[in-house]
Length: 68
Image 1 (spheres, rainbow, N blue to C red):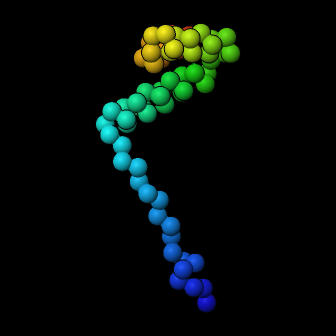
Image 2 (cartoon, helix red, strand yellow):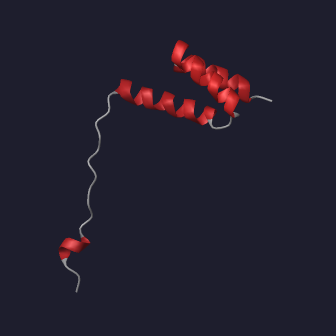
Image 3 (tube, rainbow, N blue to C red):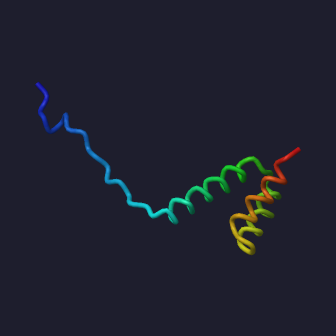
């Protein structure tokens, strides 16, 4: 017979996230999602925009670059 200790499921602690923190993660996910489809030179351009103008501007530029 298996012991009860081996059968217990370990529970992961849920991270409490503020609405602002969640919004930041959502934006970051969109940024990474758009960046994945770009060529290396385009990625460099978008990263430069992110540093200077912010994530929203970088996402907008990445969207424009990914359109055929």
